[in-house]
Image (cartoon, one colour):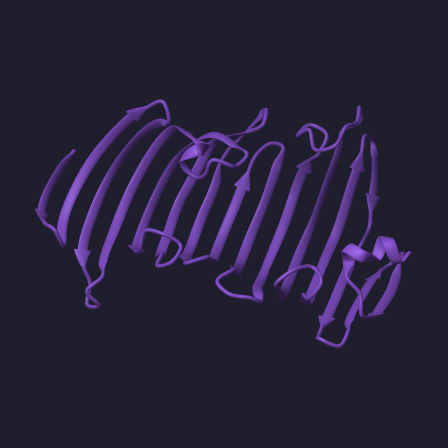
Length: 239
């Protein structure tokens, strides 16, 4: 590790090699006008263990190239812009390629873009989610360009099963029983071997209050309305 400067204004570069992975980083720290320590971290990592994120996550290991600018070091005071990519992202028995991220992390909220371009899974996420306080809020688009479900081991089948669709959502709530908003799933293409099925558009609308919950589902093949006082976890017992 090499460092120059003062406690509130310094530059450092360091490298770490361990069983959890190899890391090269440049760190620039200075005090901003609010007397907060701001920083820019330029990070390159190889074969990094998923345990560095948390002990309970499905990621085995990954490579990373990230640039992080902002303040804060935990979810209570974090406010950073993050740009970069992850590659060789190993989850279960499959290794995904080229996950790109650009956005703002603030406490427990994210606003930005996430793209994954892989042979078996390709999607684009643009939008925001805010988990800082209840009710939680999400406003995003999610375009699933392709997902080969059987090859990824998500479904068991001898057929080559895949799906593609576009989603837009604007919802808020603290759990499945009190959420309100709209979700639309468009251009649903489902492939089972050589057979192709087009399911057009599925629209889901929900409003919730202390008095009642209203659900509405519309599609080309099925529509229904559900009104009243109920909880999803109790519906199976009610019917």
